[in-house]
Length: 409
Ligand SMILES: *Cc1c(COP(=O)(O)O)cnc(C)c1O
Image 1 (tube, rainbow, N blue to C red):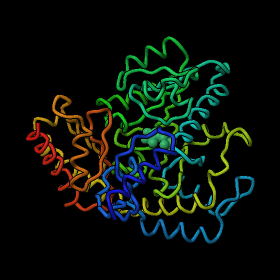
Image 2 (image 1 turned 120 degrees about the vertical axis):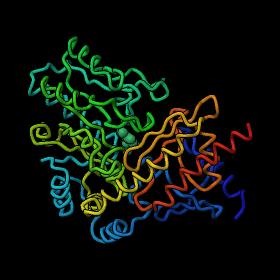
Image 3 (image 1 turned 60 degrees about the vertical axis):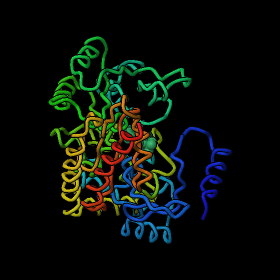
Image 4 (image 1 turned 45 degrees about the vertical axis):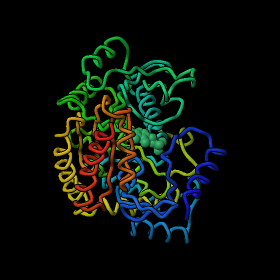
């Protein structure tokens, strides 16, 4: 194993893959629990976790076993036919979540697209809004995916630039600004609000106190569909099944993905009661792969993990350890803010000191993978198979990295 293997693999990738990512220059070849190994044989603690996806760690034994078993039985039928795994999957998912119906798709972006279509059709059929009427309110610094419709509701210039004309029907207001929501509603009919209970890409940002609850009250009163994007925050990441539960809010529609996949294949879902999901009629929405026997079997094994009464308490317990470690870290003058909820955290580094990326690189040199976001934030989503010591040590290492950069400056 030599350094050239890394360089060569990167060169081949960059020569042939479209440049829509700027990956960290390591080449991963293996994953096991909380760890990944690169092509040079170097092991890293994976605290990025596929942007929250790998809550169960890499190759969780019961989930990979379920996948292997289903691979030897039946993988794809399309929804032209019923399949046994889909039946069990939707039954178990509705039992787990308390929503009456589920529509299975593949990626998070598709689940959001499904939610947008559901809310619009519901408003057209139940509120007598014209076909071209009504707006969906999104919130600044949101991330809901990369399709052309979804970026139309984004205010991220990098995600949008050059991809117009944009889909009409979105208005973006500041995250947490209830007055701005009311103003939009006073000016035009609002079909839905589309919101992350905790904004992931923005840097693990929690809403201001009372906002999420007030938004629920307002939307209920105005018959506005409340769509929670829990693709990153949902399915146990925050210590509860849904982050919305931390605010005592039950959305009308919930989009989930990432963790639901077990890290094996793309699985996403839109959850909601019949009153909303019944707008879908045969042929009016669908996916070749969504709800395949293979995806359903994997999802069922994820549901089984989430149903284990010890699982969510373990996430919360580890989350407390993470929060304690972050509180210590926040004493450093270069660390301007720390935020966490469950096994999900953002650490802001003073931009006058160093870009977050520089700290992430130092951390990588010491065997821990995280990713910067928004230039100044280290974002992490450790797996629930990490130990308390691994979590404490990794956060302490961030402090060490800051000291090293301080000395070098
Ligand atoms: C990742 C993510 C998406 C998009 O999911 P994909 O599977 O990448 O399409 C949507 N919303 C949120 C909050 C996400 O974190």
